[in-house]
Amino acid sequence: MALPADVTTGTWTLDNSHSEIGFTVRHAGISKVRGQFTDAAATLDLAEDVADSKINATIKTASFDSGDANRDGHVKGGDFFDVEKFPEISFVSNGLVAKGNSYELTGDLTIKGVTRPVTLETEFNGVAVDPFGNTRAGVSAETTISRKDFGLTWNAVLETGGVLVSDKVAINLELAFIAPAA
View (cartoon, rainbow, N blue to C red):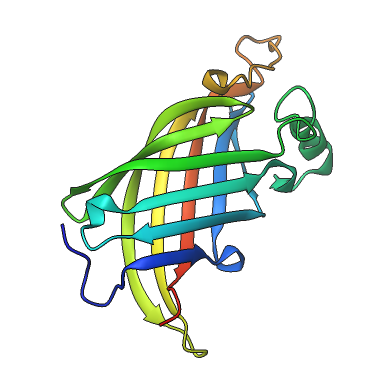
């Protein structure tokens, strides 16, 4: 599959300030808690044949932010991310397949030293040139993972049944990449 006409090959870099790496997890079985990681870096190596393109990303676990300092402190600690011992989450792609107007991006996700394959349902949102002359491309992606698959097993049983934190975590990405210099 060929690149769209207005997209150039080469190494595109993540514009972290115009991107969001978000998550949603069920809390106490009755509500959803949302948050994000605010510090990430990624490169998107676009090849002439899009299927040969690669993405490598790292996320700083200490940048976890759910909007609640107490919860954030707990999640950054040993029960969950253990940011002192595991300062980064990483993703390395190994496949991209067109599915109509969207793509399936596969790769290896590493959290807390555990690597598992994941598939991201991905949408290319187009290209724009900003007022400063930078060419940007937008990408949306989502997947759901089992946090237990990555060793994130802490939980508490509720008096009424069920658990405090769901196993399933929805990951939602809104990413902006900047094209390589001409």
